[in-house]
Length: 156
Length: 368
Image (cartoon, rainbow over the protein chains, first blue to last red):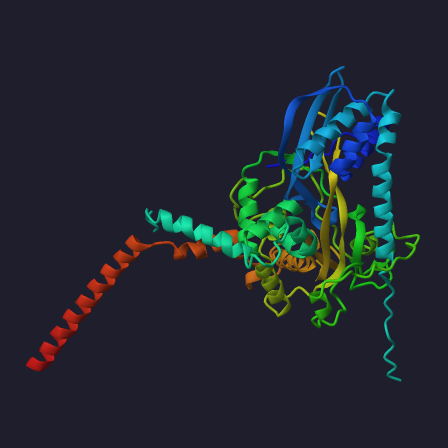
């Protein structure tokens, strides 16, 4: 049996943290490397070595009903502690341990309110790239929008 | 019965080396990269992901390369790999209503809030071989247009019908534990959630054939495609140490809402019934076939006679897995010498007895 955690209703702080986590998940490893290079991050140690595992992706019957197990996704997680104390976590689709660890460091840095703006600025390039890609995909999809017409048979 | 054999070690090693060479093919032809398979054989990769029951495009592409393009062999590799990994838990249920839609069509309504978009599709192509693809060349960039104001929100077609009470509601989420056939063997009768898990992992050809059989009259359900949508959905997971939903990234999914003919009772007015299909990647044929078979398997629940293979859950669930099927079929080619020896002895004894009997009949006839 697999539990289906719904999770608590996120507060505004958590929603902002989730947004940065989502941005890091969408970003490439080199984008995260570039972002960290712009921040002089203190040294970090692993709370838990980066690890690849599985998460069972659940769907809902009919899209909105009772959950069912669709199939697993590969996920890599990392948990770190910065030399000055804060901890950071990352869970990403895929098997890139280096990338998950970079994201965990960014998560730890972001949680310091004094660093928040700097972290977001360092990730701005990746965010802009992701947004441009999303917009282009939406424009390409929009060009395939179709209007079907039913043709009157004209029997009489 | 299968009795183990030993020996042949050198031959087996050499066969595997030969396999590696055969896999590579003509060395004067450039080798395929995993990224090339992932990008250019994307629908094959999607099939390996859904039947391998593991969303990981790079891994599925690598498995296809290793398997020389054999889908079932690639599924085997992916399934074997997943057994080596720990499971962190289950995701928050995927919100397909919030999908970033790359394709969305309905065969039931032409005008939908959010519109119909064809996306990258083989539909309406002429199915003529395009010889220009044999000559490598750049593709013209896809056309672009300003998205319509309503494009961002695409309510499900089934929600539109539900507003008028014309279609049955999805079974409600009562927080009951979700059965998982990768953890416990299937007990019959299996509930709908377990059936959908089995169909999602099931062989596309088998599920397609069963879905087709319902259309041809073996468990007819009068289906319409209410909606097919393909696109990206965020996956979220709540790790214990954080206690809130962490976005893991986005996966591509195909969802099919099949709308089927009515069911009513003395107490309830007639309503459309439903079948549901969901698949990793862009896998419309699979999602549609799954939705047909899902609906057919609800025959008993909906008070219909169970007379056809697609309505028989034990038949469907026990045979839809390509890996289980290939395992049992292909094991027949492994040495069965001891087993066969026993059969040989038996058939010889039967023949001896047969000859003795016919000899004695002849002698009797001669004596008379």
